[in-house]
Image (tube, rainbow, N blue to C red; front, side):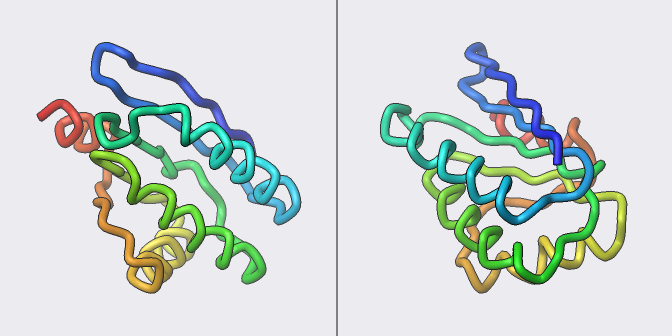
Length: 119
């Protein structure tokens, strides 16, 4: 999977765009890096947008990692995920969220995500 991260300090937002298929080992490594950076950020004042629109479905082995991510995302003021276009990937994302207690939002477009965090 390709992950592109950009900071938008004017909106106190981290924007991550995900593309393609997630390999288990690489995903765990990236989540570990992300989690290690979190204590250094004022998360309750920050928003997170993850554009999953170009993401492929997951292997079942990745779902526990996704659950871990949702717990991390709850640390942000806003956590907004843009739904994948692929129906199976969208179903996977939304099915795991309740198990992890994810409090963020799912939207269908990047514009909808920005509308939430710019409030």
